[in-house]
Length: 235
Image: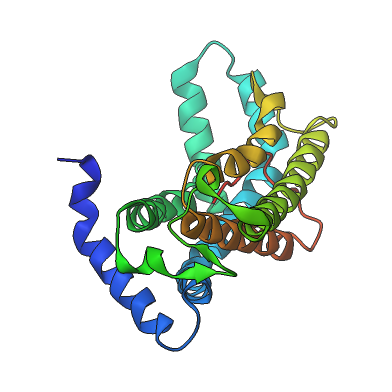
């Protein structure tokens, strides 16, 4: 039995909702609408995470100072950091919750679009939603995948640029010291393009929708010019 089998009740619910929407609009659009509704419901968590990340960036110089003051005394450092975050009502783990909450949703959608079901028999501009890129035939189907991958690449590039700018901001005096391997993190934005090549068209539609939402949401939440975390959100 697959480890994803535990998600079957949630997968069944997601299927029923998308199928109900598909009676009103094309199935591909139903996938988009369902994804948008879920991301909209998660938006308050993203707002809370952004506030926490801004607080963490604001406190970075004081954290660096505490690291210097209590170097070699880990217990005193932990106590001092805990007191600092408690006073400022901030958290060193800001930004983790939305990603953790999205993982089950991503897993449900992955299961829904990689398990044979009636939704995958519907088409998007003549390309079945259950079709993999390696099975595409004819210029029309190839064009659908080309447009999908181009959209994903554009969103990934936007995420790459934002992550690079965030890293540059952290490299300024007083910024957070870079972590080992952090220079590679911006390139993870392009992981969604590679992943989309391994899944059916329906999953690619979901990926394009959720990554576009993430890019727009982060741009809006950090529109005030506040430092943005250098990590890359893939979904």
